[in-house]
Image (cartoon, rainbow, N blue to C red; front, side, top):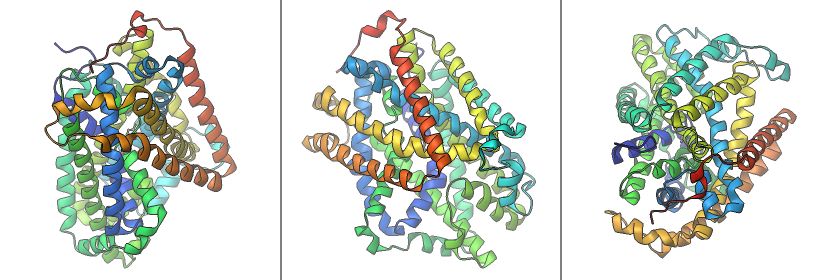
Amino acid sequence: MTDKNEWGSNMSFILAMIGSAVGLGNIWRYPYVLYSNGGGAFYIPYIVAILLMGIPFLILEYGVGYNFKSSFAKAVKTINSKWEYLGWLLPVAVFMIMIYYSAILGWDGIYIFLSFFKGWGADPNAYFTTTLLQSSDSLSGLLSFIPLIAVAMLVGWVIIWFISHRDLEKGLGKVSKILVPLLFIIMIIIVGFSLTLPGASVGLAELFHPDWSLLGNFDIWMAAFGQIVFSLSLGMSIAFTYASYTKDDSDLITNTISIALANSLFENFAALGVFSILGYMSLQSGTAVADLVTQGTGLVFIVYPTVFNVLGNWAYVLGPLFFFTVYLAGLTSILSTIEPLSFSIQNKFGMTRKRTMTILIVVGAIISMIYATSYGSSVLGYVDTFINQIAILLGVIFECIIFAWIFKAEKLIDFLNSRSKSIKLGKWWILIVKYILPIFVTIVWIGGMYDVIQNSTPDQLIFTVISAVLLLGATLAFTLLPSKSPNWENSEERV
Ligand code: PFF
């Protein structure tokens, strides 16, 4: 019998973790980052970022999470009770990600339907921005509600509730074991097909063409580190929470390497698909690949429908498959964003998993309705920038200090090595997690802050401040509210 918050097997843990890592960032962000940062030459900073940051940091997050077998907030409070506040900051920030991710999931749900009949019409750009989102960059847009988007988002919330309110293994564990392999299989089919399209090789040559001169450029190193933080969901307290759900002994080092490999494999595979399709489009339209390529919502909801419009009947197969894949990738990621806060609340306030999930999902669904207004897509951009460029990176720095320095990463080495069938940790690991990582991430963070301050519009600044106040206010509330669980003060450590 597994507990309500325990994985049934190591497989559930690995697949749920891959599900969290493999998300929209792998499909719509990575191909563009690779292309615009030196193509083939980008692999050097990318591999360095994985080896120097991704894997060592994940091992630390897993190791500490596994050790405490409790939620993130409780573990941080156990390490130093004065720092409980920091223990709530990340889970709340990640919950804020969940709320805006639900909007993107909703839009994608609508596109699954549209793709069966190319319902976006002859001008996908106008359809997406004007017809569907009714995008307005004026604050008054908050008053114009878009029911179709609200309904699509609510469908997503219901699916999330259906999976998350169950015991961990019966819900998330089981779903990950089905959906994550399915996601990989469909992706292989889509990319396989894309590679056969005329013009695919033109797109790929353009993508991989290495620009070695960029290697000396600081920006591409920042881009590589930023991509790895986002793509591997580093420092988000998710890896920590998932490891704390682990029941028995587990080879955390080998698990980490498998997860990082699967994530990189997926995103590089996605890049092959995206650029084959762009190459095809370039051949059909005579437009250079460089003028077609974009990232984010523009790639998925505008460029892809434009390609499907010229693809003939194949589009009726490829379109639904593509939007369904994006939905799966988004769903398996969004499911992970609720776990850290939910588990922390269960620990502190003695509430059941079912009740906590239900309350959080209802609250999340209500707040998310701001994204179902004409101004919603602007707010989404602002909140996303604040969370990813400012809040989460700060979280990574805090985690390095609390886990590597105060908890002392050295304590984990023997335990982790004794179970590892692959590499063994040594002094190099301590050097990375204590010094190299926090310094590097601080540099990336300063770069991000500078960017936000330089390029912000007044509206963006307002929403950055509102997001910061909400984040800090909720964090403070969770810290100050008195605990209702006798176990909140007792900690259980495994190492
Ligand atoms: N790692 C996910 C991706 O690459 O798309 C994104 C993500 C998932 C970010 C979960 C944050 C998160 F909490």
